[in-house]
Length: 270
Figure 1: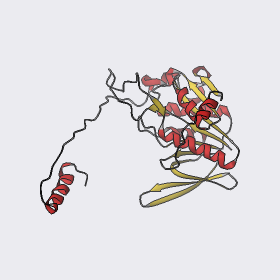
Figure 2: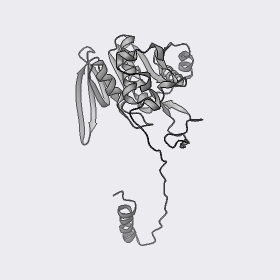
Figure 3: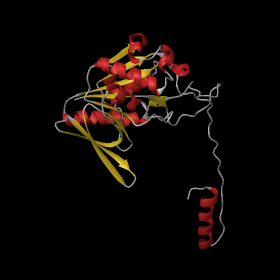
């Protein structure tokens, strides 16, 4: 089985965020970049599927500047077989619509895949449209927020479990299909030292902007990057966190009542 995983690189969740001089994005200088955490679930699931079947191939694909290679190498060190880097600085800050179009074009050029996985969303912009866009462009089924995947019918179908309030929904789709992965699907493995060493020798195919037929996908080069984005960010703010300390000096019954009142009226969490 050939499995493709769409990977996004995002700022580290523990990075100290500062607003840049334009006031419309974060300062990216000096930030540590990581594999989007939800995409890690997708990479891990792809590797586990290959391990369960005892055969197959896992390919990673991502688009962006040179630094993207670090995240692809992380996935290769986890156990993926090869990667594709759609490389150009113009791909940075490209909106989800154009990203999906470019990815779909390249995926078609790579041949056929039995299954495509990606994370349910990107944690930097809190968006989750790319997987849906690619599914639409490729004309294949899409199931979102998947927390369990079972291959059925001699690996020709995928039975997907989605958690809902008070229960779960099970959806079965024919393959090929795109599934977006939710937290809890698995526990991503750490890249071992041998895995890191092997990753250095694994193939990373580089595709440049000149390899993209923009006419075929209905875009122009001007649609790439921040200037061409259909989504415009007018301002960025770092939320202010207020910390207040209350000491309730009353007997237990009165203290409990006062605590409930504070949680309801002051903290507004009940």
